[in-house]
Length: 314
Image (cartoon, rainbow, N blue to C red):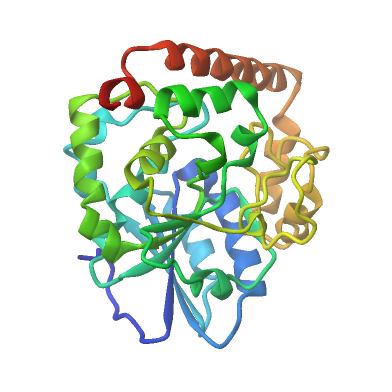
């Protein structure tokens, strides 16, 4: 059941985000880009999952809504209370990254939804992604390009999760068949795995989604989740996902950062974003670089650990 009032429209496209206060200003940019490029032939309901947010900031984001876009913030604190203590904060992944795993049973009026991360800009018509045929698969996603291009992280997915990197999707943009996910009992299996094993991973929700949904994933074109790596072959992206350590609001030299600033300049949070960028000094950059090294070391250590999906179940 949902936590917000209102009724589902027959031609409504439901789009979910999850966030904490740290990412609200970037969520604003993402939604602005989505609205500007979406087809006006449909209605859209944007649902932002959270566990408590700054009311003044959420009201600003709600003001982006119009006759085609309804924006709701849904507090799911109570719904995840029993398992919250098991969810791990890992590097730059906050607890909000797990919330997408609870959508299937929290929003039973929906059989199909889009899930999007906050660190994106949408350059194409999002309705085209929503109407992609999943062909009896539970989710649709794009192969994780950073992992695919990294020998260390490719080794991690193969040895820790038991999945080849060429079949390992990024969970930041997903088309989700909630009816199929309910049929497969993905949320229940996730909760059971967390409670029973709580595996060591470097990509918290993503590892569980790839493991639990393997064999039921439709692989989508890279254009719908284009990582800002120059080595990726994608000339006309529909979504740019700033999924790497450094973001456009850290460094102008981030590849494809200009697309972020195109929409950020109109944001009500523009001054806050600029302040964040100005505060990203040499010390902050060195800490980010150290975190990048640490996560590579952990990826190798996890691959050697006895507590992995592959070693426990294969």
